Length: 212
Image (cartoon, rainbow, N blue to C red; front, side, top):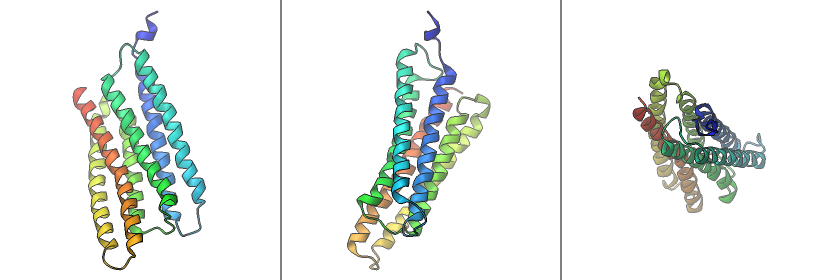
């Protein structure tokens, strides 16, 4: 009778880790997509489909975690923080999906060095976010988790600089206004991935502080 009321510590963290795995998979697929634009080396529609598949898989994981939150009387860490982190992981993957789907929407057939840089930074941030989620249950690894969050913050700052440089170049007179407008929006979507990673990392930092 009381077993269902006991905190399922392992299961909560396993679901969060599975969710962040899907985030990394989506980021890698999007990087391959962007790097392959105009090169003829990648099946672009298949990579967009792969990103969308990872997003749907993550939605199922998020739904399972929320059900677990509702039926568990106690949780290993603050209930609201678990929910917030799950939502923020979902927002990271939604942002990744927006980037992948924008390739067709904005008819982007060629990549740029800046788009490739932002895609690589997105993978770096998502990978560190995944590692931070994986280490979160282990109090003896709190310093490692905190350092990963700091690295995500530094990566996001670097992405800001790349985005600003990229947008400045769009309006230097060497591009058509329509290309500049499309790429400005595309760069903004890419940078949003980094912003969402930073939001999730700050929630992890709050969890560390509350449970230290």
